Image 1 (cartoon, protein in one colour):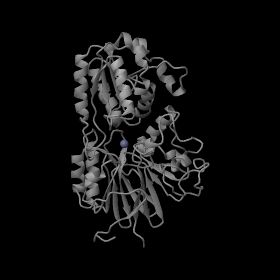
Image 2 (cartoon, protein in one colour):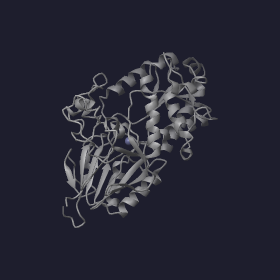
Image 3 (spheres, protein in one colour):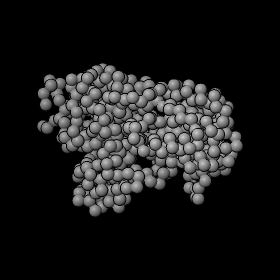
Length: 453
Ligand SMILES: [Zn+2]
């Protein structure tokens, strides 16, 4: 019988865009289904030039930005495509976590293909979908899995292990095939609040002597960006709040709930309140009650974040619970020393109303740009300069460092290693002699224990 194979339909020499096909006899399952943002997508599409919503698959297939796979996409997504609709030939999709580069194209899949997610991931995706009209994950046969409980799909068995990442509810998977186990890390780190989860996953992976390790390498290779731990971010923010008596501003990734907790606590320790957008408040409110173990800050609770109401022509029903008590720009401006305001880059025009005093701190709590000619970064600095704000870089990455990745590859000891979700797969050649630098669309058969194919 043919050996099980792994095929990378995205996530090759790029950060994000993971789409991994595992085939074993008649069984075919996918891991993650997210867009390739950078650098390939950006060669053809930018903010003002997007795939048409009437023919999304066709427009992305044109540039090889989606895989040409039959029995995968919905009839609707295939409108006007030269790839015809066929009944599903994929038996399940497993989503490692709720970041866009892993889950963002779920809306294109045929609705009858089961989509397996952690319950928390489903809740995050639902909250995002309710509060962001442009995000559509689609209707699916959703199946929620439990931590470390095997899920059977045909002859395959998938065991989801929670791992630490910059969004909660992230998973790595052990995929048991007819010829050994495949370990897929998803995105992961071991310096965050759930580092222990990552260690448990890696230990379980090593114990199965996996036939293949599919490992993310966001920070592999040359990475000049500085990285703090979550406690390091906390200490840095404490220092800034101590030295600046006026309004302080910060920006974070919208789903980095660990960071929102850190900022809430730092603000509270400095006799301030964190102030968040209605969208962030909606996400926190949707999750806080259901996942008490995450200790999420609850908007409106004692010591919890306050909510900022931007000037808007219309408010949505999900925003309604926050509007009565929400702060306006004038309130934040007049009592700036009481607040740490989380302000997304997209909402920078609020600065025109907020008028923070010159020298007020702006804490950039996201990763530094990959390249020096990053347009968004230039625009952000133009705004900061215009308003005379002080820039402070403070971030704990969602990803393991290059050095940690080397040690992980050695300790898992897989027969074959496939670096993905990285621009520098060759950096993995150093720690392991069993590295394959994968190519898009090539099925790689699993090696058996004797080393043969
Ligand atoms: Zn991620």
